[in-house]
Length: 424
Image (cartoon, rainbow, N blue to C red; front, side, top):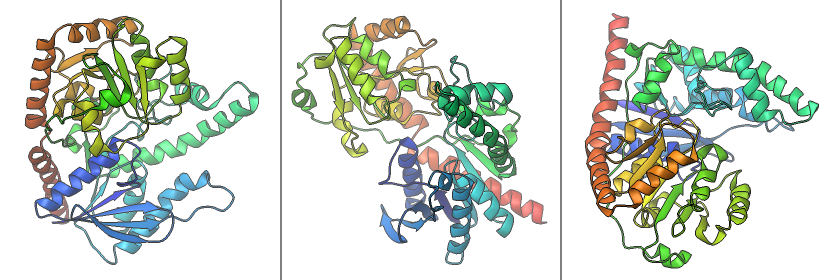
């Protein structure tokens, strides 16, 4: 079987868990004997390389002179289509596999031109939510929103206070109509949709997509051993102080402000926040305002391979935001290291967190509920130990590389069987 994975970005160009997950899946397929190649896109000249035995080709995308922002819209989809068509002269796959929203429309066009079936991994809200957040300004699920609901959210995100900014937001909203229609056609024409959690699967079924044309394929995660770490010494954290950990994009929607505010009510606790993002400056100012600056430790973006030192020292890993998480790689990694987890009941987070077993689910966005559940875990080393052990067992059972491989091969075989049936 020949598989071409097409993704806008690929390691080491990492902006989120999605880029790591696609590499892990490509690596598994290669290890199991599948002829898999990865096609990704970047600036500059073509580059061919081998990463963990997986052949990776990086092709350039032309930009529109003087209008770089427009180069990231439908023009980019066309460029990815054009480059993919050229690449098929070198490698003809049995299946095309899109791993992000940018590559999906281009593979639809490639499939129409070549009759090669394509599948789409659904690993975020982008294909269903124009603002790409998945949760609206009122804290409600807004996957598939349209009309005035989408207009309101577009103004909230891009409008600002000036009439000029509101006019720009209005233009975005008008653009969103054909843009989201393209995504809808792309998903409905796909041979199979592969949501990465049952949570997001259930949400998109509500939008009218057939469950018969879906198969959940969880992102894989290996169980990890805790490593010897002196991170607390480096950061000036007392030996037995509770550590609240967050690793990811620093955005307000991720609930960073609630993690920092918790320190007011847990005087001996420290927070480690790893990553980068638009909210970083405000988050640092908040820590200062709350007199928690000395107990809030901001760590720049860190390679995934080095995060084990932080997970190994964490008391709890937190994802308390109102952003739509399709699964939550940080939570997977925390469970793999045997750390208790807390996250909001949104999207695919309940796929990872079994309430009361390996952590707690938050039913609201309130600080009070978060504080209560954090204190319950911190109050008992037995609870932390049991939750950590349960989390590891869950990762081994439900998110292993072997299970991921079986699920994805089953999906590919289903697509190829369907193609043969239609041909006959």
